[in-house]
Length: 312
Ligand SMILES: O=C(CO)COP(=O)(O)O
Ligand SMILES: O=C[C@H](O)COP(=O)(O)O
Ligand SMILES: [Zn+2]
Ligand SMILES: [Zn+2]
Image (cartoon, protein in one colour):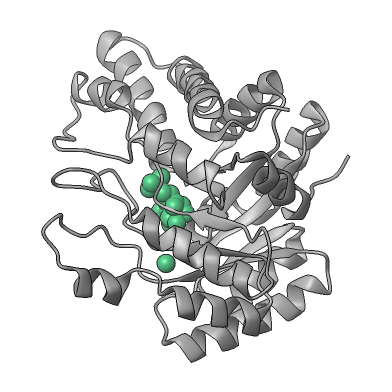
C-alpha cells in the first residue's frame, strides 16, 4: 500500500455525484481522528498540509505519520500540499513524497498565475503527482454587494477555461462565496451556484469533460463545537459557516474536493477546553488530546454521511 494521487478519486467522485473530503492535518491526533472515521466508513480521503503545518509537524515526522495511516487502514489516501505559495514549496513537497500539490497563484495577475501553475504542473506530472490551482479571490462578500463587485473577486468562467487549457492543471479551486476561517457570513449564507454551473458549461463545451472543481473554505462551523468552546472559556461569538445543504449541492455538481480545516480545529479545541475546564486537576495530555481525537472522528463521520457521500 502506498499513497495515491487524486486522479481516480476525482473521476469516481465526479461520476458518482459525491466529493472527497480534504482535511487539514497538524498533529498525530488529528491524523488518527480523521482516518479512524474514514476506515469505518470505507472512504478515500485527502490529508492536506499547509506550508505552516509542514513546518510545525516537521517534514520527516509528517511523512512517516501519513505513511503509517496508509499502512494501518489500507485506505486510498492522498497527501496534498494546501495553498503552496510558490514553485519551491511545491517541489519540496513533491520531493518528500506528496502525491498531490496545490499551487496557489490566485493573488497574482492571470498570466502570472498561469505561468507559475504551468511550471508546477510540469514538475509534478513527470512524477505522477496531481496539481490543484486557484483562480479568483476567496473572500466572503456581504449580502448587499452588487454583481460587479462579485464579478471582480469571484472566478470568471471564461478565465477558468483559459486557465485550465493553458496550464493542464488537474483540478481548479474557485471562488463562489466561501472563505477561510470561522466567520464566513455576517448575514445570510449565500453561494454563487450559477457561476459554478457556468464554469462547468464552459469546460464541457470546450471538450473538457468531468473536470473536478475544488471548494475551499467549506467548513460548516458546527454550532456544537462552537458552543463547546464558548461554554468552556472560549470567545467565538458570531462564528458562522457554510450550511450542510449547500455543501451537498456543491458535491452533487462538479465539486469533487471539499476543504475543511476550521471544523477540525473547533472540534479539537472545544474538546481540550472542555476537559481542562471540567477537570482543573487534570494534567495528562492523553485525556484532553484523546477527547479531541474522538471528536475529530465524530466530526469526520458526520461529514462523510451528511456532506461528502464518499463511502464505498
Ligand atoms: O480551505 C481550507 C483549507 O485550504 C479550509 O477552509 P475552512 O477554514 O472553511 O475550514
Ligand atoms: O487554508 C488554510 C488552512 O486553513 C491552513 O491554515 P494554516 O496556514 O494556518 O495552517
Ligand atoms: Zn488563495
Ligand atoms: Zn483553502
